[in-house]
Length: 511
Image: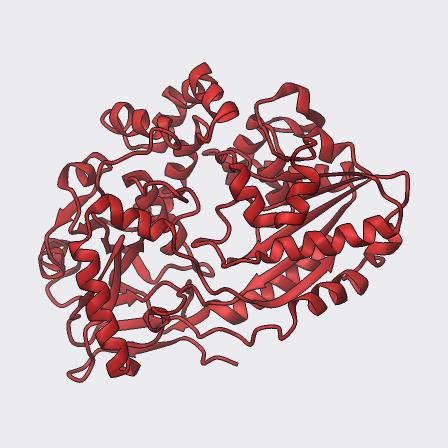
């Protein structure tokens, strides 16, 4: 059992603290009195993952054992997360591959021969054959891929979508193979509180359906709850969740996940070499190095069965793993944005992705109240280089250059630009035939940053490209001291400061 997360107050003895800064790290000296919100250490890993998977399949929650659900003449579909979960990717073998092999073993024993596998990638980019192989494992890949039975979901292919009903916001359609199956098995890696059944529709829905879940009005429309009900009534779902631990750093840099005052002399020597190496390495090479990084994840819980019951068990485990009690919201919050996001795998973390990672994924990881008070200031670290992958993010380029130069307001973006980006034939073509994210993808992520931008009266990026920051409606500073000086007019000269020390992920519970 790892030590829980806690809040440390910086004093004269506190060493400089590690801060992610894109594809590099900094050691930053924080002002005295700064509260540092440290993540918890990992929960105890399962000693035998294969045994845990078999036990979950044979004794599921609120469901018959999987073997009892399988019949010789049935149509079986196995859906699984795409390459963006988790980030960085886990070392082989991927747990999803082990789960899928266990499912297929039982399916073969039951005489099931109509089986297909589909990546629940939603509006994310299609995975390459190598990435599919990495997740499902070589044996499963060789058995299914060549015959077209291991595929990426296509949210734009009318021939592979099936309508399952309608909500107040419009028609709901799912992957036709999944919707027409006698049993849909959803294999899910959990590194954040689960979203419920809507995660299935987000991964296997049509563009319009996903828009109801991720668009500007999703939270207020009631559509997510309606879609969840439609999915569970249209297809029988058996879910398998594997909850991951907090081991995001692999050897030889696993010390980066430990508290700085516990670094040994060897750790400090390694840090010196890592820092110098990253500073001297050209940016493109440094990015390739980061993209090849793998995490030493292990599972702390595997559950299977009825989706609602499985997700509740996963939520409880994630909360036990990530929750940190914070005594009070600060006037100023500080956090670093790391190189890895679910949408920049083997690619570039452009300014839109960096903003989403900091403002939505990290700042938004809380139980109801952020670690910064309403009207406070937020300081983030990331270079915000205006670099975009033409292969993966073509619509991001146009969103950054053509839309954000006109407005940053989600309501105006949704009214004036969303339909154009969603229906652009070139974006659709690239999404369907290459590894491009869907045209509307950057807008969905931008909408998710709105809560943080409304909550904070000032947002400043340290070490960032000033033009990129200004285009997104933010300010840039050269140092932390400069950033604190810039926000002084908003929060005063002696503000309370909290630093969210992440990764690993912290789920903040502000009192």
